[in-house]
Picture (cartoon, rainbow, N blue to C red):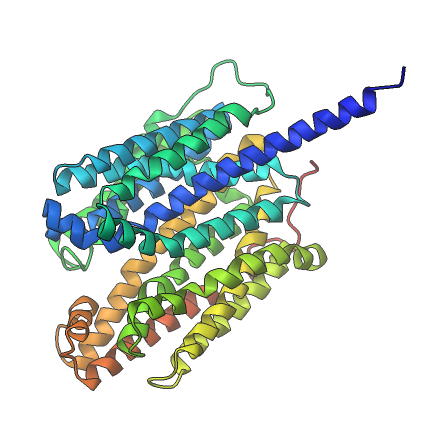
Length: 497
């Protein structure tokens, strides 16, 4: 009778590989949910407002979700390090699906906004825990593969979201935008529950959760992000509500520091900012979130208003960077294995700085291929920048700190996007007002262009406003380059696996 041990070992290895493949499929589905939900609602706003009313507050459909995702990221990161990734991901996905179901049943705009916040509370777990689990499942050598897959899913979902939302709102009902999450999320939950088996680890005798710190972080982040999101929109920047919110945010930030210093297991531990690699990556990816606002928010307006493109063609000009970004990210491993994580990221962000700086020098009005080419190059540059930093910083910590580290990075990137939307919106509105000699803003000017009543001077003013935004984005990219140059170590202290 022959030795059956090799066959048994091979079967066990095959089973483990199949199990990991099922978990990866679940992570990709969860990532698709999080990415779709950030964009799928946008094209259905007219139908939603027509059914529920509440036009004056509909922007909170996006702001409320963004606030909830951002402020819960560090909380879920710490919880995943304390209790494991699986329970946090399952609980977050269940909360996200509950919010989706409630959104589909909403009876007025206030209820829909509240249920979108419930969705965001679960979405924070999806974003942070998926990225952390990807690092848990794969060793450093294989990690770029899974991260590039997740990047591709995010890019495709983000681009497809508006189109899917428009089709569902037009040919079905806007409520299906939320109901479609249920079967996708249920499949992801089933795969996670069945196939994700985390190794048993020595847990503390009594896990302490810093609930006071979690509530303080949530309150502080919510107040400050509300001030940034609504400032210059719902009220002037220097008005009473704006100043009151910023003052309350600063006071709550002080309270967070006091609570976290005295907590046994703080939600945002001090080592996140004391360790040079983590602090540098946090600041650099915060700058990435800020600079991404320029193309994602302002380029479609530029393409339609200045270049005269239809909405679909304008969307293509923006979407081309989602083609080069994942490819560049997947290939970045061949670069950082030779020159290191920091130098690869500096190469990417340095190139991105030059590309963003080149945008204002495009001819007026120009051809569509010109900004499209710059976006294709920008995606390639940012793929070289983001993925090496994420893989590198995750490789400097062990399992017990990886969730907190990943969440802090994503929190900074998300906060950068919120700050960028406020700052660049103010810059664009200021340029428009100075060029047109009045209190004009981007929204009112865009409505005039849509109605065909805007003169040539308005088109030039929009071009100048977007050019100013891109110059600001190039400054943010340069700041990220300087952070890596002076703060990040030449070689990340990668732990042996």
